[in-house]
Amino acid sequence: MVESVFMAELSWPEFSAKMAAGAPVFLAVGATEQHGPHLPLGVDVILPTAIAERVARNVGGIVAPTIPYGYKSQPRSGGGEAFPGTTSLNSQTLVLVIRDVIHNLGLHGARRIVIINGHFENTWPIVEALDLAIRELKHDGINDMTALRLEYWDFVKRETLDKLFPEGFPGTDLEHASLLETSMMLLFRPELVELDKVPDDGPAKFPTYDRTPVRPGFVPASGVLARAQGSTAEKGSWLVEDHVSMITAAVKTEFGI
Image (tube, rainbow, N blue to C red):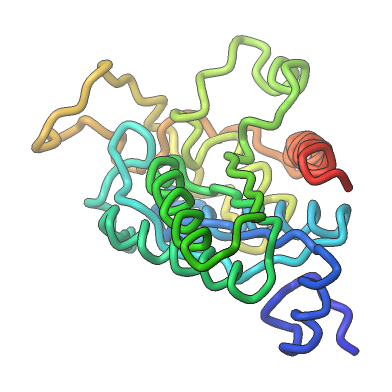
């Protein structure tokens, strides 16, 4: 018998047995998006998957294959679609993909699902997809699905942010490819981080509105929206400890584990 937390590494009988036992299924929804010159395009896949894996191990769950494409990158939170390599889905496409995955998991016995968002712009497509999937499952006679939907970056202690940002936290939306993500990547995948390429053209200063078309110079040329200087694996470990412990507690509470 294969002992793995990853659904893709299990046989169908092993998957079926875990569903019969009530194992929660973790589905990370990421993106393929620029993260500056020092980080890879897959940051929004790597980070939520790694967090999902650790929480799943804590609660006896399994991790479904991560959805690697997300909703369109926005200038004020992700730099925008103009950066090469940023490969996105229309909202309707993303909604239907997530809906179908959740629906199929439900048809095959999943009754506890945790959706972990790894890309700021995915939030509302995930909400819509979950609503549609639950409706379809009820139409199929499955009425006992329970799902949690969360953004992993919301699970952090105030004292941790104060330690990371003694001069004040700039906000999650501006932390794109900056201190938080760079530090966690140094923890999880240091071989993919090139600290010598950390740019010095930020932080971004945005108005409280969007403009179409985006005017030249609206986004820092590097695509990094705040400061990545000072990133370390130790700082990444502070964040991950909060993310994993707090999400684990929420899952145990809601699922009665």
